[in-house]
Image 1 (cartoon, rainbow, N blue to C red):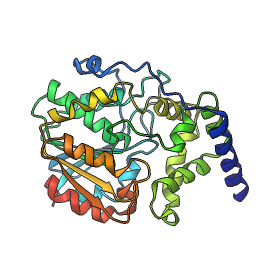
Image 2 (cartoon, helix red, strand yellow; image 1 turned 135 degrees about the vertical axis):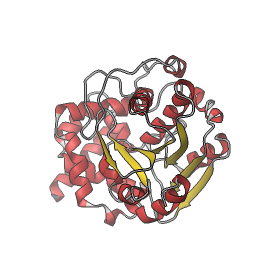
Image 3 (cartoon, one colour; image 1 turned 180 degrees about the vertical axis):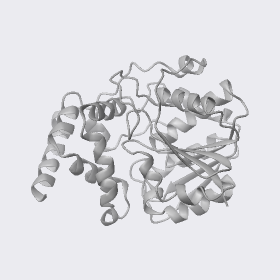
Image 4 (cartoon, rainbow, N blue to C red; image 1 turned 60 degrees about the vertical axis):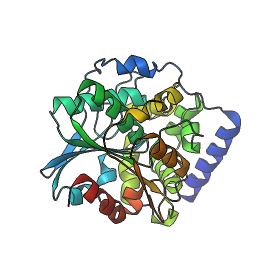
Length: 307
């Protein structure tokens, strides 16, 4: 294993010097997606627990429903909790269609809510899934007003920012796909989780095993690379101008030591979304649902009415 780690480190260093991340600029602008256009038919995988008010959990880049394993059972004591795998991740389909931008994923979440006739629903999104939740909220306000009750953003994307190293590597033409094939999936996943966690020694091996599964198939690797290349839409700043239109109560939660999406993004989101509240979790990095699930649950339960 030490040899594999050294190999991964060498590959990463070579990538930084020999490649350059290239984001896909072909994603259609926000206005095109906002015109209530239908999403392609993709049957998203979902897991459901409990009864009561609907809470839809949306994971981040490279994760799956598994990321909510510590939080979902507690919320399900008094709420109907639905955790969904985004297109390309977990048990959801991974078509090689090139449509993995935040807007594409948000269309699927919008249609998931409508198809399941979810009402009084709260969208909870983490990281890339937070960006999906933001856009899906705007889409639902237009296509199905009144269905959504609340919004929760956890260490969410929302503005243009420097990409973390692992996303830059994946988005580098030729080199990104090559690295996903050459480096063992568990090694890749463990290295990423060490960037995500504030306490690197606390990275759980069960999570490494589960998330690594997504890199063991050609379809999973392709979906991961496509998402990395489309992770920031070209008109991100234009989209951000829409946040002031969000008209549901919004809770923003951030790990104090997030090295992936800086706390400053959370502060900007709080300022942009009317009435939004920002809560900071100490001793946590980018994924408080992994590092500090009890503290996160304590913040979510009263806001969601799941207590």
